[in-house]
Image (cartoon, rainbow, N blue to C red):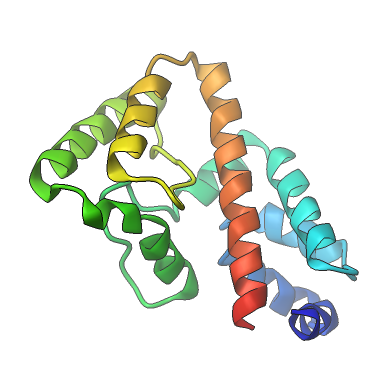
Length: 169
């Protein structure tokens, strides 16, 4: 992992930003995290990434959310971020497909209607039923509370993806 981190630290700013966009699809995020290099270890990089997500303006959060598929929908493409998304939602594969997918689709529509963006959850390790239960709970949030939850979920996903990226590199 140290070799991958050293290689990341040595990249040009634009190359480093492009790599980071697979972890969080906000240009502001990628620019901030790339600009703070060099990182001494994965913990320092993950902490900087989490802090950078929390500092994003709402328009920048929405930019990142646009790269995430709806829960229950398979991410298209063959990029690293699409592959990670499919892994993150793998808990859905063990559930009764039709009932759960219909409930998630209805929940996604209700969520998007209420909040104006995709429902985001750090799905790693969660079953489809758990994701659906959390979706239903979050539908009761007010706008300000939900924005905070979305930032926390995006930060968690970003930290996990940074760890995966370093492991794979």
